[in-house]
Image (cartoon, rainbow, N blue to C red):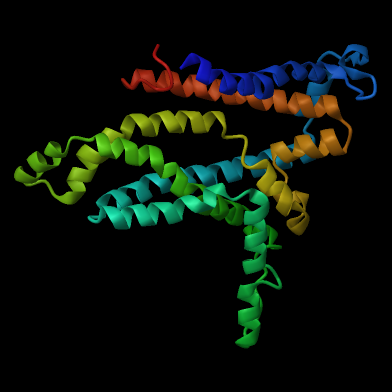
Length: 290
């Protein structure tokens, strides 16, 4: 079993842990043609952008926090609700068919998914063509800066909700059915059974996933947003991940971009550790035991 795990471990080390060493450029005036060894050290100068009120960074932070809040409120509960609905279906065959259909969007890349939304909701998309043919005014959805955050949130729900139900359905399958029978005999309604048995049984995995979500809360979909940024402009769509890309890869401010990315990662780590401590205080196991 350990030998079978080695390829996966090698991938994680190569593409997740080894690149962490590159964060050293956050403390350098990094120049790609000089490399890390030859670039001059700048100390904490690159981190000054975090405290000097840079308007572009503040705008990216505001957009990131807004999208994070929307996804926490609407995206995180969606697979829980969907899992409860699927679990209530009496027919196993119907449940399997519905699950298979709902899983499909997860396997589409963001390039394909964004293209689908543009073909349906874009200025020359199916919806607007239908509205024009019916004598109605076309809707500006894809290029509407005010609707952008709601649009990306709905895209995430459509793409990942079905796939995210797998864990919750697995937990629901492990709940002892005799608990429902006993609750029914005691006169508990379906709503009370859901609250006291179903959600109680799902609570550990919900807390675990919520803590992990906090660690990734400042990353709100780099590829998804970058693909749609030209349509709405950077003022409405710039987030921390695209800020790092636009200032580092595109703008050449590698050290500043690395500093922002490093601080973002540290904040995510602190959020996970803090949330895990709070979970322990309420008697939950969290991500790891104390």
